[in-house]
Amino acid sequence: MKLRIACATLAIGFLLCSGAALAATTATTKKHAHAASSTSHAVSHRSGHATVSHARIAQTRTHAVGKASVRAASTVVYRHGRRVVVSRRAVYEPKSAVSSFNPNLTMGDVVEGEDPVVRAAAIEALGNMNGTALAIDPNSGRILAMVNQKLALSAGAEPCSTIKVAVALAGLKEGLITPDMQVNLGGRYSENLTHALAHSVNAYFEVLGRALGFERVKHYANEFGLGELAGYNIAGEQLGVYPDHELPAADGGVGRMCSFGESISMTPLQLGALVSAIANGGTLYYLQHPTTQTEAAVFQPQVKRVLDIQNVIPQVMPGMLGAVDFADGTARSLRTNFVEFPVLGKTGTCSNNGTHYGWFVSYGNSPAGKIVTVIFLNGARGMAGPKAAELTGEFYRAMQERNYFAPKPVETVPLQSAGGQ
Image 1: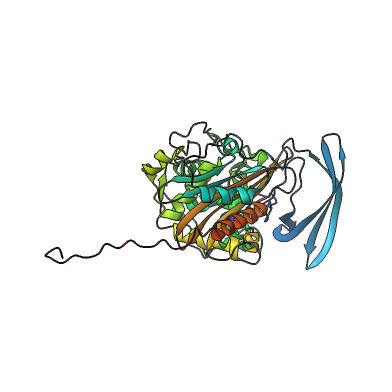
Image 2: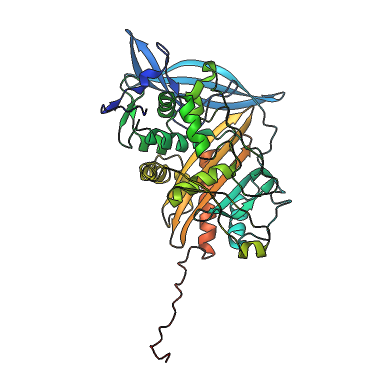
C-alpha cells in the first residue's frame, strides 16, 4: 500500500533516528573519511528541541604530505544570525590517482556511425579534461556521439547527486511528495521538491529516502534501468552496480544512498537512458551506438520498457530547469556559455579516496528537437558537477555555431489534380 501523507508540511523528517542530529550538505559535495564538504546544514539541540543552523566549512589547501594533501578546515555556524567559528582542524585527503587531464581522450573510439557535427562539438567542449561526453536522441535511443568510449563504457562510478532525479520520481509515484509540499528537515527548516532539486539539498533526499525505505528505492532504481545494461549490443559496455542490501546505518543507510548514491555504481549510459525517458515522456529505450554509416542508415529503435512516470515527469521538470536557470542553481554555470533555449538538468559532485567526480545530465529543448547529454568528469580537485554543466554549455554553444539546432525544413509533396495534371 502506498504511504500517503496529507498534511501540508510533510513530517517524514521524524523518521530519522530518534535523538540523532541531522547533518546533510546542501551543495553537491560530500564528506568522506578524508574530505570535508564545502556547505552543510547542521541541527543543534537546545532544551530538547531540534533547531536548524547553517554551517559553513572553509577549506584551504596548504601542502602535500606523501600521497595526501593537507587542508585547514574551519567549521562556522550561524546562531541567532551571528557567525561563530566552532572548530578548526586539519583535513587529510588522499591524492587522486587519476589525472584531471587526458591528452589521448579519443584514442580507440569507434566513430564511423556517429554524427560528425555532434562529435566535433563534444570534443571541443571537453578539450583535454579527463572525462566522457555522451549525446543521445531521446526519441530513439540512438547515441549520436560518445567521446572517450573507454570511460563511457566502464563500470561507472558513484552517481553523486544525480541519483536525486530517480529518488524524486519514486517519491512522486508513491504519493509521498508534491513539487510544492514543504518537507520538514528538522526544526524550522523545510524545503520543497523544486528547490531541493535545483539546489541539490541533500537533507531533503535523505529524509525522502528513509520514508520510501530501501526496498521501494531499489525497486524504482531497477525499474529506471540502474543495475542493468543500458545499451543494446554495444561492445565493451560494462554493468553498473545497484546493491542488494542497504548501506549500513553507520554509513548513512538508505538516506545516504538517496542523497549521494553511496554504494551505487552508475554508468553514463544508464543515466543518459533514464533522462531520455524523462525527455520523451516515459519510454526507456535501449541505447544503440551505430558503428558504421550503414548501421546508422538502417537504425531501428529498440524499446526496453515503458515507465509509468508520465504523470510525474512534469513535476520534476521545474527543479531540473531551476538547476540551470535559478541564480543559485547548481548548474547555473551552463548559462555562462549558452542561453538560446531551455535546458533542464541535474549536477552531481562527490569524491572517493581522493578521486573527484563531476556529473551533469541534461536535455535541451532545441528548435530542432530534444537532445540529451551526459558529461562525466573524474580526477583531482576541481572535477565537479558545476564544471560539467559549464562544459555542457560549451557543447550546446558549439552545436549552435555549427547550425545544428536550426529548424529542419518540412518536406512538402505537390498536390496533383484528379486527372494527374
